[in-house]
Length: 109
Image 1 (cartoon, rainbow, N blue to C red):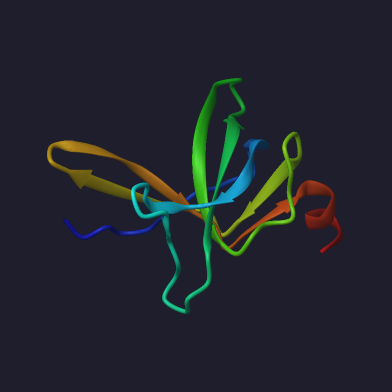
Image 2 (image 1 turned 90 degrees about the horizontal axis):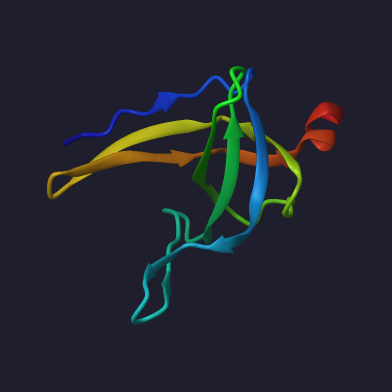
C-alpha cells in the first residue's frame, strides 16, 4: 500500500508536549536509531492534541533533529502530515512534522 501524505490543519488544535523528545529506536535488540535519508537522527515526541470540541488524543510525531521543546510546552507543529499505514491487517496513522516549535517562538517567527 502506497502512503499518500495527508496535510493536517493545526489552526484549531491545541498541541502540548507530554513526553520529552527522544531518538526513535528501530530495533530494541540492537539499539539501532532511525535516521532520515541524509543520516540525521529522527526524534519522536509524544503530544496531546485537543480539538475545538475538547476531544483529546495522545499521538507521536516524528521529526528530523531534536526539537527545542520540553514537557508542558504548547507546541506549533509546522508542516504536520499524517501517513496511513497497514501491516498484517493492522493499520494506523503515523505523523511527521517539518518543525515542532514552542508556541512563543512560533509567534515570533
